[in-house]
Image (cartoon, rainbow, N blue to C red; front, side, top):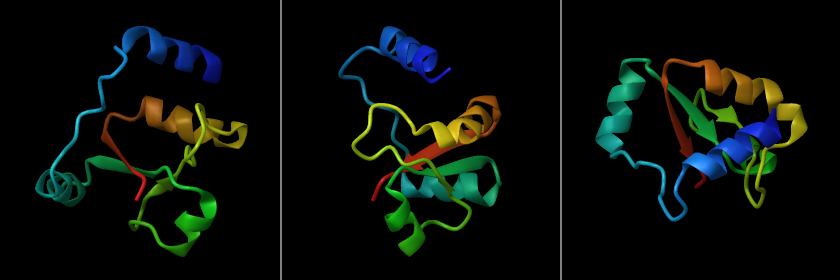
Length: 89
């Protein structure tokens, strides 16, 4: 599944195009409406040290794809109807 999703992403997302960015105010609105899944893409030790409350760990730092043990997390993110916001710092 990871390989298929990675290939689809590489196929359909033009290179050099970044993910849309939102303002802090837009983020706060999503959180207040409980209409967001927050994803922390840092390594597990950084996540353990401090993270946004309710954030889901998906350690992608320095990787092209997610670790196998996070397949359930990725499946949940694909299935959600909520906005998905990622952060790495």
